[in-house]
Amino acid sequence: MASSLELQAMRRAIALSAHGLGSTSPNPPVGCVILDATGQPIGEGYHARKGEAHAEGNALLAAGPASRGGTAVVTLEPCNHAGHTPACRQLLIDAGIARVVIALIDPTSRGDGGVNELLKAGVSVETDVLSEEALLVLGPWHTSLALSRPALTWLYVETSEGQAGALQRIPSARDLLLIADAVLDADGRLDEATPRSHGSGMIRLPADPHQLDHRELLETLHAGGVRHLLLDGGTELAAPFLTDDLVDHVVACLPDRGPSSQPRLTSQGVMMPDGFQLTGISRIPRYVKVSAIRRDRTGQDRSSPLS
Ligand SMILES: Nc1nc(O)c(N)c(N[C@@H]2O[C@H](COP(=O)(O)O)[C@@H](O)[C@H]2O)n1
Image (cartoon, rainbow, N blue to C red; front, side, top):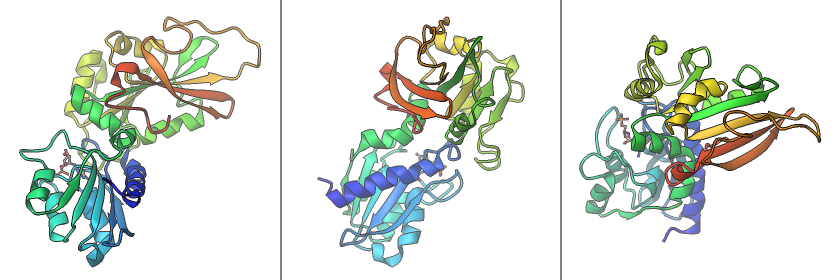
């Protein structure tokens, strides 16, 4: 059973992994903490971008030789393939790590996953440690793999005319750009959510998204490495995606109209489409921000990290 120091380290690894949101795709955002043989944290790291070191490599680099006999606490199963970087399980074995604590098994493990190789090398392994909490960050990547399309967040602001894109109207709504890979607005503009965050060539966006229907667009984006798409616009933008049950999260910004006012009714109902459950509510200047998740997707993707 994971010790209390290991659980603390896992929660820190989960938090660190969120530094990779919006830049690691098509790779997952992963965090890792190395504990020495006495259980003290001596190194930590996260995966920042495809083509760069994985979380385990970064954490081992920071920990140095004191990692011998220690524990690696990592949010995703160490990889078992040498790709852009050496196999993480081998880095851990070579560093003399005695125990590996893992939140989630990698659904893309090639052949035998890293766990089997670690066990064969005599490393003690524990899996499924705080896996639900790890999905706070890995959720959209996980959903995208399971559904072969980007996870989809629909962001809107309620206006006197109905619903509209929020990014141009509400400065703090722009925080959502930090966790998405790409953003589509009501005029059909499709951009990398944070320009150049993924590194050159790591995600590819279609030059003319107008030519594609909504399903083709999602397929093309997924093939191009996009794992989380933000839709910024009113019901007209979201309608085809909602009709085909392709929206995973909704973030609605409701203006303060004073303590007594008439609700705005839209084709989607009063606020959230059917089938969504609230996951977070926060106050931002002049608005309340309401986050919701598609109910049957809670197993894979519990909520958006900024909900
Ligand atoms: N355990 C682990 N830590 C990380 O930091 C990671 N980025 C991954 N990713 C896994 O490896 C695949 C990407 O490999 P390359 O970087 O392209 O060589 C990715 O699909 C995950 O399976 N795992």
